[in-house]
Length: 222
Image (tube, rainbow, N blue to C red):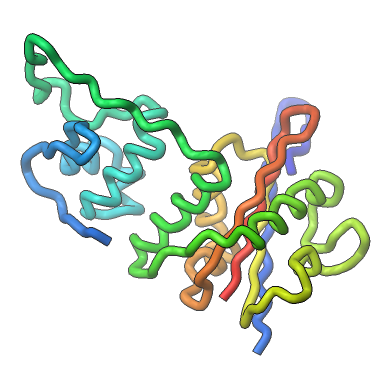
């Protein structure tokens, strides 16, 4: 939750875990034409943006996923300017894919971190997603893993939902899916949920209040 003290802004996150019982390509020296027609130089991208390489290493597929999901929108370059050839007389401009909805973008960013760490991705679970959206609206009222009615956060999940283990991450104030996922990864408790090999499913809730302030919730199940 963002609190203002003078000119300072505070971003908050919290995590809880409860236990109840790729196509892969490494960096090559030459730019490559990706399936959507984009010319992408993974070696250039990793060298130019060490913050990205620190997370995704030398896996060209993961580096391109980052560019396609986040880097293009952030103005990052896919290839060195001097490597760009003059366009043909009648160029075909590839369609730029639309950015995913914030909850789906969080799932994708989460799975990129998991894949970089050698884990399988989390599948989308609509029941968890609906419960996570409910929790996002509730964290706008009470930023806690306790619900406004005093019960635990996991009571937002239908009682007939089958699981072995559950986890929740919450955050507020982060403007994008990439920023909030990065913040969770930089926090030990949140990272433990994201990188837990026992989880197989995820649902993400995203709610913006009347003041334009965003709230984010990840619910995990295994």
